[in-house]
Length: 399
Image (cartoon, rainbow, N blue to C red):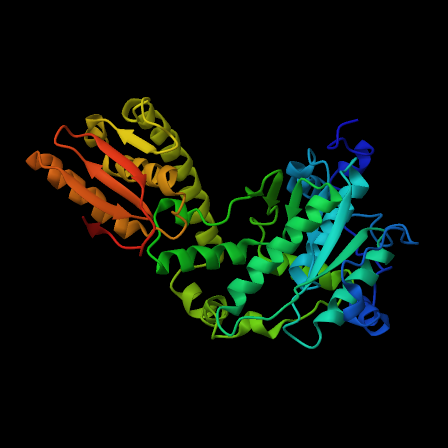
């Protein structure tokens, strides 16, 4: 039977939604009070829980079984799944949806993982609470600790990097091919606004994708991107769970916290989460089309005689392509030469493209460096991109 096969057609029907009662009460808070100290939870795993999905034997409040199956259907081909669950409302909703999905289909093995960042005194107890809840819900749990000194600045970015590193390790150890997070529509809207503020292009405005590669053999999946946060919060409340509240999520010192504080003003201007999510979806559609066009342009412009270990060459036909495709071809060439384009700003690439076009119009040679690569334009109109020798990088320089 396929991993996506329903366990009985009746369960996939749009049946009346009845709130579950077994999970009533402050279940997560009670679990935290009864849990052992967080320091003992390093890589803790609950493999043999005693109960069998209490409260998940009927449709979830606010979600038909058809919607649950459709939301998580892309995960059906995974060989194993890691759910990132912090105990907040979003990830608790993801946990409930995933376990209801598991009750409806022949799902891959599911393991819940929680990261203790050790940034707040309560964090160890919160991981313990999630572990205890998972034991009640008959799902394996693993606690992971971010150990070592913490940076004085950029703490959110460092915590995010550590979290994904630990989760990727847990996925590899569990034999999982998919890491699933609870990013939702409100998160997507914030990402679009942050990308706008940074001057991102079409690819940046596409924001988070439903699936993207995270590491070799590991897919990062975000099945809830089309859902508003309010629906997830309502589900958790209806199921009788009290979610963890992390005050740093509203801290205006951090970019997302500042945006959340201005949500009312944004909505008054028409910048609603739903419209921003729609913008991201349309930008993703345009980005995919542009990437396909870039592949076609590359077949025309990238010279096959270039030594890939040294760099790449573009023919004079490069200058016949639309500007957007020229930008993308250059970015690919720089990436191939230096593999250092993660922080390459679009405006710097635009400046380089303009300089190349002006030099080509004059029939003059040109040499520039950008993103760890040396870009040379010959009098014949050929562009050769090679790795820059080690030195200060990050600016467009005349050489």
